[in-house]
Structures are given as structure tokens and as C-alpha cells.
Figure 1 (spheres, rainbow, N blue to C red):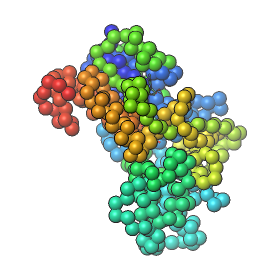
Figure 2 (figure 1 turned 135 degrees about the vertical axis):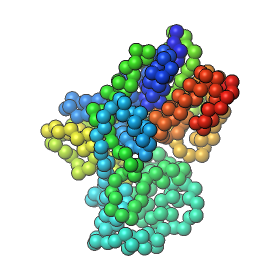
Figure 3 (figure 1 turned 180 degrees about the vertical axis):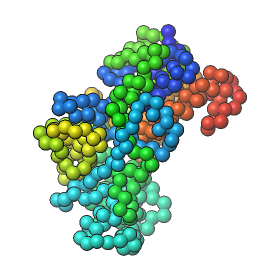
Figure 4 (figure 1 turned 60 degrees about the vertical axis):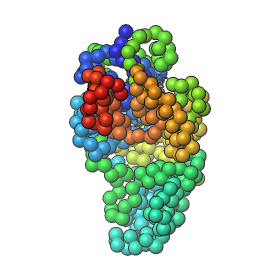
Length: 383
Ligand SMILES: Cc1cc2nc3c(=O)[nH]c(=O)nc-3n(C[C@H](O)[C@H](O)[C@H](O)COP(=O)(O)OP(=O)(O)OC[C@H]3O[C@@H](n4cnc5c(N)ncnc54)[C@H](O)[C@@H]3O)c2cc1C
């Protein structure tokens, strides 16, 4: 008998288990169908001793001091400025687009003023962009869109940018100064010794039991619990009763090389003819000093049996299907749906930590017979 059954040992499940065990003193059983904790943020050492992000590079970043402080209880940090390049037209380009990229394009030194004037000429006037194509052409015009975004997006999603929400391409910054960092958040760092030790520490409370290689259905038949926290795919929870939610999957192809580094940056994007979208050499970010290196090529693929559901599809048709499941989930009394799969939306790690911490506050208020609405406790009997 457990107080909480938690499905999934990723950020969502682990943060909630840690909070519930340490703050409420309740028992938690986490079941995880993979053979490790950490969800998609799991990392491991390969045969060459390179610390790899098993499910693709996970660049931690946040603007929230609360989240840094919370995770800081379980890890030290190694600050990293994530740098990437793009390979197209036979050469490396500075990416995301910034003043250096513009200089590469025109083949001579330039200024922010000149770049802004040129972009103003190239830009397509669209007052409120409704999709990812519009969001980019309204900032930089067709030429840069076609060089860096058009085919990359098609490869990644098997849909054209104009079929995808503005947020997909809109999340990539476009700058007219020399700031060439991939991301804009204030805090950009990796757990100093890796993500996995951080999760191990988070889950070390004796009130938490973790069962790996265990599916939710199997656990339900074996254990009793009072409340379920579910971080798996929401359509799977309901036996796909409204249909399968679409996802994009990935295949990771690692290669170890007997040289210190393979490429000039942590990540190189391949927006055009190659089948893979990027090559990641995470050693640039982890700072490991080793004579060998491991690079990972990333091939987008359709989701299907035996493949991981990595990315919910950010498009109106998929969202409409999800909302049917969400309506049903809202009627559940003793089940909490949390995390990227259960809410069918791409979130960064810090956002998932924030979501789990907010969910914990709601559960805590509920234990006290209160309801939390937008962070404010109000007296009530039911959530
Ligand atoms: C390729 C890729 C790159 C990313 N890069 C970044 C990045 O650079 N920066 C960033 O901030 N975020 C990144 N993310 C997002 C990040 O992975 C997520 O924000 C985070 O992992 C979500 O945590 P979660 O707990 O919601 O989900 P997950 O990590 O997916 O955890 C859910 C867990 O539930 C388990 N599970 C599912 N169904 C069942 C079942 N029936 N029974 C038992 N267990 C089950 C799964 O095996 C999984 O381990 C990336 C994601 C991907 C896919």
C-alpha cells in the first residue's frame, strides 16, 4: 500500500516524488517502464568514457531562481554557453542568425544598423504570424528562411513550417548584435556530474521506492495506492479511445572517434540535403578532457511501435484531439496528469520542474482541504 503511485521517473515524476516524500512524509512508488531513472534527461558514460545525453542533448537553462535553487539541492552546476553552428552551402554559419551570420552572408564587416536596415527590406509584412513560416519570414524574409529553416523544419516534423504553430520556429532567437548564444535565458548550465546523479539524489528518500522495467498497467494490478500521478502519454492512459495522438520520434546514431574533437561546436545543424538534422558533440558542453570523442547524428522518424514519443506535434489538428483527452482527464478525482506526455505539449526541463512544483502545491492544499488557484490558496473542499 502506497500513498502515491507515480508513473514515470522523468523530471515530472521525480520532482513530485521528492516533494511528496520530503514535505508531506508520504510514501511514493515510482514505476518506470525504461531501465533507468531520469526520463529523457538521462545520461550515461559510453565505452569511450564520454558522458552522453542518451536521448539527445539536454541544454538546461532557466530564468527562474526558484528552479535553480530547488535543483541546486541535488546538484552542483557547470555553467555553459551553448554554441551551435549551421552547415549549409558548403560551409559553417553562425547560428542562430546574428550580426556575424549577416557578415558571412554579405562577405564583409557590417553593423547592427546595416543589418536592421537590410532585414527591414527582406521582411515580409505580416502583422500577427499564424504559423512557423510566417513567424520567420516576417522577421528575416525568404532567403534566410530558406537557408536555415525551411528544410530543417520539414525534416524534423515531416510537415511544412506553415502547418506548424508559430512557437516551433519562433522559439529560435534572431539577433542583430553579436550575441551568438543558442539560448537567451539568464542561467545556462549542466548538472556538474551529469543528470543521472542528480536524479539519484532526488529519489534517495527512503519513502520513495522506484521500480524500473515496470509498466503502469502491471503496477496497477500489483499495488494499492490512494492517488495516482501519471506522467506517461495521456492517450495511452485512456486506451487511445479518441484515437492515437501524433508524435515525432528520433533515432540517435553515436560514433566514437579517436580524436579530441570532431567539430568546432557542441552542435552543428544540417538544415538541407542530409537525412540527419544535427550532429551533437556534447563533450564541448560537459568539458570532459578525453583523447576520444563521441558524436551523435540525429535522424527524425515517424512514431510507431518500439519508438519513443519524443515530440508532441505542435499543430491545430493534434491539439484538437488532445483537448478531448484533456476534458476527460479533468473529470478524474484521484489522478493528476503532469509532464510533457500527459499534457501533450513540448516543455523545457525547467518548465516541467515548475509545473511539478505547482502541482505539488495543489496536492498539498488538497491534503489540507484547500484549493489552489493560480498559486493562491482558497478554502474549498475539492479540486
Ligand atoms: C530530443 C530532445 C531534446 C530535448 N532537449 C532539451 C533541452 O535542450 N533543454 C530542455 O530544457 N529540454 C529539452 N527537452 C525536453 C525535456 O526532455 C523534457 O522537458 C523533460 O524530459 C520532460 O520531463 P517529463 O517527466 O515530463 O517526461 P519524460 O522525461 O519523458 O518522463 C516520462 C517518463 O514516463 C515513462 N513512462 C511513460 N509511459 C509509462 C508507462 N505506461 N509505465 C511506466 N512508465 C512510463 C517514460 O519511460 C519516461 O521515462 C528535450 C526533449 C527531447 C525529446
